[in-house]
Image (cartoon, rainbow over all chains, first blue to last red; front, side, top):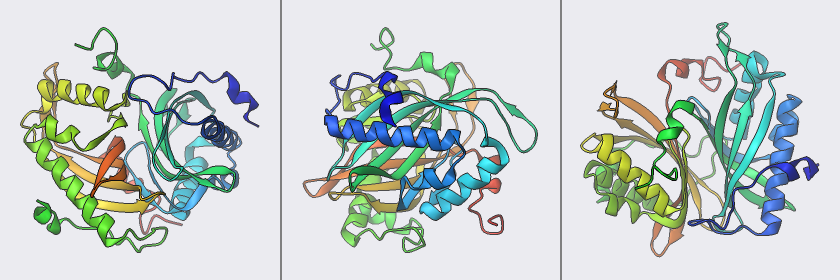
Length: 168
Length: 168
């Protein structure tokens, strides 16, 4: 299942400020994101929420905070029924994997999403987002214990103080 | 220092889907957020970045991803110089504290921010955001290892599928 992810560009994890994740952690992150992607693109909420721990929280792209997997799952099912069914998502990059404590890691993944129609009929153009995930080991996999998904405001990115040439 | 936070409303952490954080963890989260708030409102970046682990990452409100404390700090210093110096922040609520693994916790804090002027002269009105933090124990405190800050789109909140009365 993870084979399709081998082509995903990885940011150099040895860059300044980065802590190296183990090869095993990296492989398990790739596996989880591959499963996420497959579940999203199949609109398969059962498969998607098999990836979550029961006490997982989520903050969505407009700042709604869902507490516990049951609530996170319910909200996603509502939004898939309303607007995301059949809307293609792709993984642009696994930007970082940072070990936290006790085998947990934080991951930043960059996704792109196709155009979709909102319930009031507005067409949302293709967009990108950066998703922070907190993953913990469970058996031989990672499960999601927290997610926070931030819209990339494209016109703001060139003002990023961390961009080379902007940095003083 | 934490005394001012005693008035901050806490969401009931025993609600469904929530794992109880210990009293000690809760106290340490309150202490960290109190220090954050004091540092922000004093525009004291030295105090603010004493709260971070060296390998901390941050995804800001428009989706910029900063890798490592040095980069996170540089970017915050640039934005404080450009627009946030003297802009008052207040903590509306610590919405959740969820144990992750190895003593780490994820926290969702809701903040409000006063109006500020962007570099191009646009006046940004008062706004709110939900900040996800990943905290790990270091000595007798927590330090920040990840932050993701999401703007609350106020007009979207009434469509939250998790709201009572909306939930099917």
